[in-house]
Length: 117
Image (tube, rainbow, N blue to C red; front, side, top):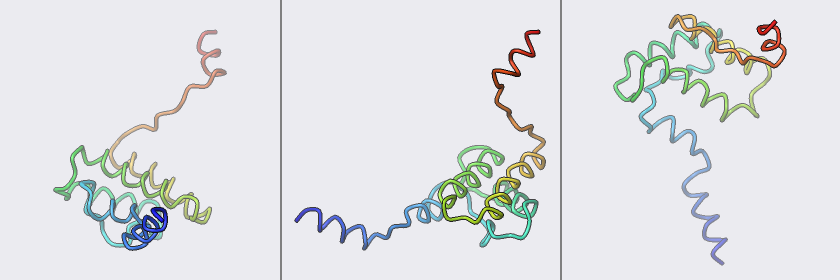
């Protein structure tokens, strides 16, 4: 009996908690349709603009913009078409370029060996 009431409660609340996080959290105030823009550069520029204008963010503009992009990719990832996911991943690189940040690369065992020699 308890299980049935939980299910009904969940249906009433909705299943899209991630949409509620996007709308109500202290992350960013995003432009509508930002993740459906035609190019990775347009997505990155929109995120940067939103991050710099937002009064809701708690951390720096770059960190907030990158966090929101990563959050969207992680939440929608399994349902995204391959080309769209690739565009969003490229938007990360564009965002880094707009803020003058370098991509952090993981050092592999092979690279570590080459460094020692």
